[in-house]
Length: 138
Image 1 (cartoon, one colour):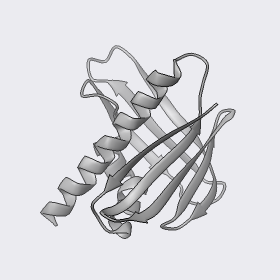
Image 2: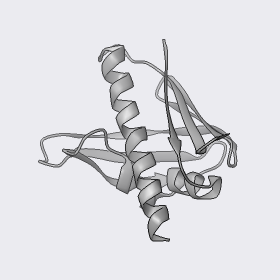
Image 3: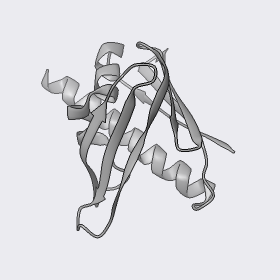
Image 4: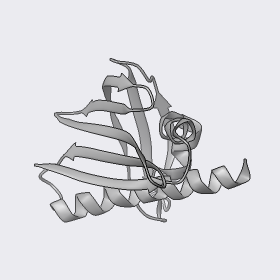
């Protein structure tokens, strides 16, 4: 099953793209809740390049690596990647209030569709808040 989440970011595409693809930015927004954080991220943004984000509970009780390979990069428009046997696509679409970021991904059998959609949506909402707050300081 495919799941879709999206958000609108009130910022220009170059700022949205950079924040989505730069490790120093990713560690600031890539968490589904306040009790989790991303401790490190790597990005080799090219077709065939690898990425990884280390996500950990802030209390140190658990963590995991979210990692995969980019399969298609169209700068400022689209990122496609594979992670394990699953795939995802990220679209960056001009909208009336900035850039709509839409992520479509393959679900997994361990968690409910609602849990997966909620977690990925929370991360995307954190992303939008981060980019918009960072934009105000520039």
